[in-house]
Amino acid sequence: MNESFVYFSIGSNLGDRYYNISKCISLIEKKIGNVISISSLYKNLAQGFVGDYFYNCCIKVKSYNSPLKILNFISSIESEMGRENRNSEEYQSRIIDIDIILFDDLIFEDQNLKIPHPRFHERNFVLLPLLEINNELIDPKSKVKIKSYLMKIKSDDSIEKISFNYLKA
Image (cartoon, rainbow, N blue to C red):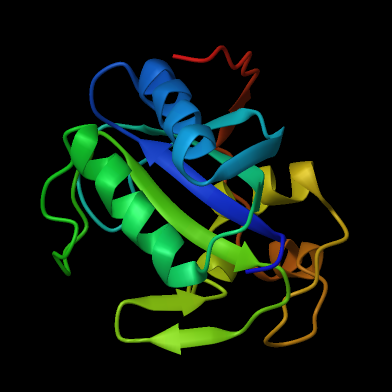
């Protein structure tokens, strides 16, 4: 497999969210590839269910793994960190949540994985940290600049940017 750049969204709303995200990034670096960029943290309300606030961030990773192999690594990282019910259709609180948002300019669909992530363009808590890393990204599916999606969704004053000094956990 050739070198690829993969953008991940990472979120946590249980326990020590800051630590959970730091540990997750360390595990991604250990199992998936070299972490190139890390956004700030964004604190936001749970969406789609009642739960505690989330910390979210995005990272850019250089990897030589295929999308499905990365999905397997994600599942193992989430499981190792104590996440349960990854296959549930309902939104719920979770110690860690890792989504592949973009994988180079790949469009990929199978029963367990869709790239680009099918709802990333509807979520401020993904768009803000993603654009912080790279504000020139283009959605490979629509060919639209990703920053234009921010203008199409309602601004959310409840999202708070928090500096993130990542230290390997």
